[in-house]
Image (tube, rainbow, N blue to C red):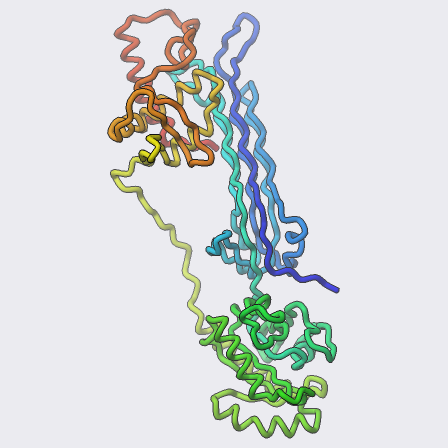
Length: 478
């Protein structure tokens, strides 16, 4: 038996970015030829893409953990690391992507539609990229960023124009088999249909899809039977068709009460009141079924329903039903708003947006949160004094030190950068100048040039600060 899965929880992990390389070019008679460390490669993304050949989420039910490859580290000789390979996950048309809280992240409809479920980490810059006219020999490189890691929920909502709903064994599978080329399993016992079946119907110039939704029973909207599992497949359908059994062998059932019960379940599920309805009285090839159909038809028409008497077995009344459905589908398609051209929305930051926040917690710890500070911390090799000093300079230029002072931070107070579960904590010392002492100022090696006068060093230091601010504050590693 074919297994159908329409809801899974997927654990996705993007690739980590490769580390930058700290290297110095060396050759005969030129032992210090300058930095030539390459950049690290970008980590691979995890991308969900609609594929028409995929009809179920079964593959991800059995293998829910998916990870993209990491970027390669940079190498000497200005060789950049190879980017990680993106992981493309094929999903059925109509897949909805949610977070664990139930918030919709993406609604994937249409072949080729894609969504990046986890973004790969950026590669770290090598020391060649960090060099400048004033920083001639950086003795450090930036680390690659970790890729996104998290869980997403995939829900499949069948994409069809018409949905057949009704009690188990009402003849929905038989009806879809004669209206289209679909060949669903057909039997005379309840819950024969365990998966939604799709068929394509051609009526005149209109081609539409029809879905056979598994049988509903009282309490389906609360999870009884197969109802709650498959009611979501009705949401995308433009037309609802009530298939009523006029030849049921159960003495406590009749077409009108069946209709009332299914309508109550659809109302309880919600969001389907605006769908046009058609009532199909099936199995009129049975003598008692024909009599019952003629008996209940006036009552149903008084309620405003269009009623069709058909027999899937004897192929009676199918042509009229097919064209009536085609007419409703065509009207529904014409009423849909046309897709607007893609618009680029620009959301400039406020002029007073510093890009980070400083808050004082109850235990006296000062916490810094912001995209740039947290990214810079992730890129820093804390085993390298020069890299730590470079981080300190970047934070000071961003204004973190000034904000800490305004918040009341004093020498020796604890400062954390990042979220509680993954923060770097250190004792704050204002205006600390760090770095490899043998190199003097960070990135400057006295072996490259003769000593300069003090005034010239001060001017160069100011020029270096201005240049670094312009070059790196807005720099996005590739």
